[in-house]
Image (cartoon, rainbow over all chains, first blue to last red; front, side, top):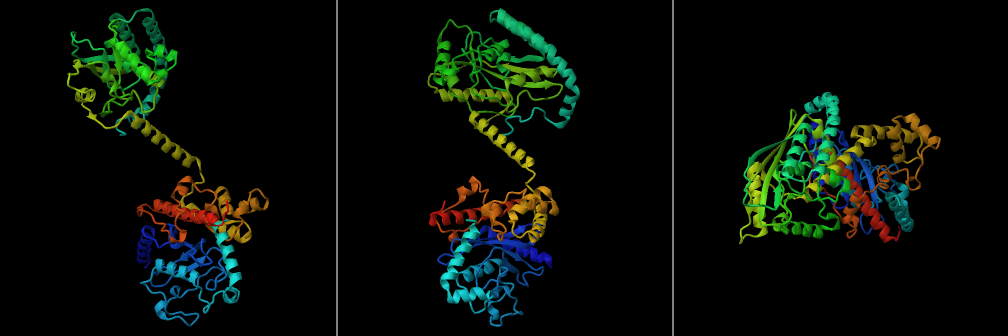
Length: 165
Length: 411
């Protein structure tokens, strides 16, 4: 089981090394454990997260790609679809069976044809367009909806913080 | 390239061991021979330069352990060459050749007067620049009152003389139309310890020659070669070079003496790097890193205010959670102000030490989110892959930082 997961992860790592999507870097934290990855995601342009570099961890299950990895930002991100502890809540990270929110079509969910690259791209578009209907951070969703100015201010602070400036 | 030179004097570990055993004898030999060599120096000072003096010196050198063997002598008495050219294998070459064919050797490197005297170089004014130097040699050669030819090394630097010839400098061939080529090769007895190494100087070469029982220089004197009228200097140089290489049975290479200097620099910087990484114990292996980051998390749970990078740095030194905690609590560790952002795992540790190499790869023309941070290839070894990954992360963060600072006018 783990062997095929390893092979698959290695193939994805190679793909992401040689031809990564724009503004994304991902790979194992160290190769002793191929099931623990690290990713750097650039805040998408023309959004309030522009310019930031956001580090995240991906934890793959031993039966990957049958089950999706878990993704967690290791920096603070005030965002409707990110739990306060950094966990990312998007449909592609949910296995077809479980649906905590109850309003995701199974087409958007995890399946073995998805990949790390697709997850990270989904995360980028999530950063660009928060989905305040399935809020993981209610506070953030509320601010996003009602006080956009404040949300952008917090985002700008996050960007600076992520760059260590 | 590396086969042209010897990096180490000793061909194999066995010879090093034997040399260590031999060392006391060698040292005694050196001391005795040093006094004999002093006599040689005395002889060369008192007696005028002539064939007889050369013979006496040659005998003294034989006692000192430098044996000279002439394997071929095709000197043509009718053709008196004013320029000798030879391949260059050690800093003792010119003395050896001087015993066979009395000659003057210009000082190429601008040595002190003392060194010129001890090693029998003649000052042709190299310190006043190459132009004066070359003019002086040409003047000397054309002046018929000077009896002795000048020895020049067209290779300009030493090789081991066993694998190849460097490219020739044209100058020796432009001085005179008659050239006396010679070849020289050296071996040691009983161990084949090298006469010259890549970076050795004349004093060490001389020391080792006296240290080992016997050093044998084999010399072949080839017939003098004359430049034909319709031949250019380059063609003449090439012809002599071919002659030398076929006599020595070595290849002609495209390397020049400048390549040798570059090669030395390269080796030098490599060994410095090696030294630096072995000195620095803080270059941990991935397993160690994983261990440290695990411990760092535990420390972090106790002291959530302290940045992870600081914790990890101290843990690398202490390898002990309790000691790191007490170090932090006692204020023994300086916590940098801008790293006080505790929530970022990887960013702060990489920010303070952005190397120039990374800076060079930063492209601030395109928005960082539109750049691809890819590697040109996927390395086979896991450590190389990891290194490439770390480097790309640094490039990305540095790019983002620079663009952000430019955009917001921060510095």
